[in-house]
Length: 151
Image (tube, rainbow, N blue to C red; front, top):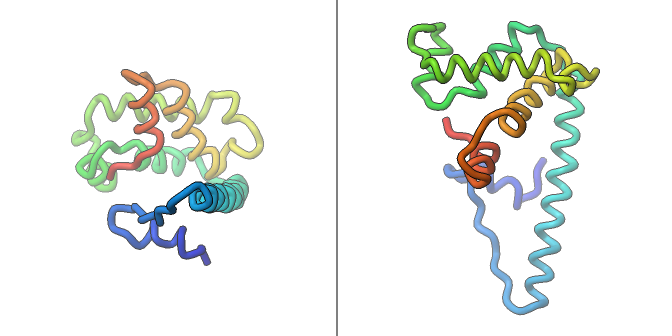
């Protein structure tokens, strides 16, 4: 069970959580300590999840399905993927899918025991593509693309 301050991100429809404002330097130290505590807890939980994912084996066919869903830019594309409607997919989407798949199957980081043929490898392929291959107009656009999900 997650602590209350992490649960709120799952309960709010926009995924945001209100944070208590502290006054004065003593309050700022408390707020900073709380933020670091949340960060440490989140890092520990994510490590557990990633370690579990590194033991879940998947096929190349399932890898492609996961990547198709992960790189879908909007609901319409996601619906076309779910229905198997190849004609409803844009060329840009299909090119992105092929680039991520190639990265997933050929990048040296994808050939390690923890990534090759695993659920973690699928996650790592999508994030690796966005961090290492995709071109962005500026650093802010890159950050927003990596740190936000829009579906």
